[in-house]
Length: 244
Length: 311
Image 1 (tube, each protein chain N blue to C red):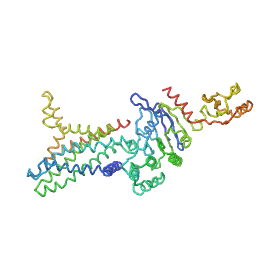
Image 2 (cartoon, each protein chain N blue to C red):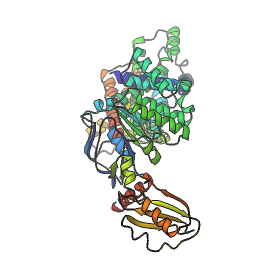
Image 3 (cartoon, rainbow over the protein chains, first blue to last red):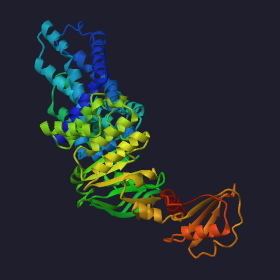
């Protein structure tokens, strides 16, 4: 575990060594505010919950998370530091996980800094704080899912802009996978199992119930397994692509 | 001891390293030479465990880099080509990071970092971000991270590339001082560097080993070794006198001014006195007459051109 935490620390510090982390957090908070109050009608609804706040998160993450994820490995490959890192006595597993966890922690910090809205809703009414906590957790796990996709894509290219565009596209597909519009587009002869499996991979399928306050452990497990699978894929892609 | 056995690396259609075998033992400073694209960097990347070979093996003090990677990597210090480092970190933070990865904590970490900062003279830029440093300083930062743990094996990919003559001198001194009871492998295409710091030189071309020996041995294998260079004040008909000497291998006359002669010796023979005698007898109009030492450069050309033909 030693080297994992060393890499984690370095990565997290590097976000804050440049304006990147601050810009990310500020933009995240501003867009969150706009979505919640303007589009979500937080006050107009007259309900003491954070549904308008959480329900926009998939769309917010769609652009914010790939922006962080795109540099994860693409920059290491571009500057050649990947050669330095992987010839130090470090397990690839620790490097992949350490980098991912640092970026995920940055998401967590940004998310935690939305706490004033939690305070506000408690001041205005009497919300179910357990539900809100569960929704925060679910939102963070979903961000991790986006990030894990981004880690893998970033490992596949030296160009972080390409990584960004590909990650956004892929994340978009995973967000809408479970949506009715997409599911209805399936031809009728498609076996139900396939359609169900497809729907089960959708982020919205899992996230919507979390946002409403139904924290099913299976939904968290889905995101955890999803993250694990994409990080495993990242390691494989790094092994294949590091030579060029 | 590093043992490289039948190492090959194939990139799709292209063979970068082709059945390379050699050993390096403690105390040796091995100059790893070859034209661009000969497979130097690829070989170093395989030795340090960054790339996996297509076939063959690398053992560092008995630890196979493929199966016992962490133990082998712990023994090595590596300066990759271009000395990459994290530009957004300060020199100090970067070295602390590498030190922590190497397993140092607390006082020991502070000591190690402090010592290496002094050793490569980075103290003045310790708190500066690496991306703001000059090329020479960046190279030294790379060197510092490679030697911080006092590694048994030091692998440096073009350590002086892009440095000014003073910096080159400094880095060479540093390497010489480090080299005692260590294994050092330096890739370079600066041949004077090999004569300056290496105890042994290996030349590869097209991924194959084409020469291996001490710099002096390699120089001696040059066809220009012990050649006599003569500079005349006016053109001269040589007559058959030189050709009659058994130890003369050939004569090259400068095609342009016809005033410079290069009289080649048979391998291992010295011909200066014989040539001087003839020159005196024939009353050559001589401006200058010297004995040439073989140049690594010539050997390099001889063996790598041959390698290219084979490839």
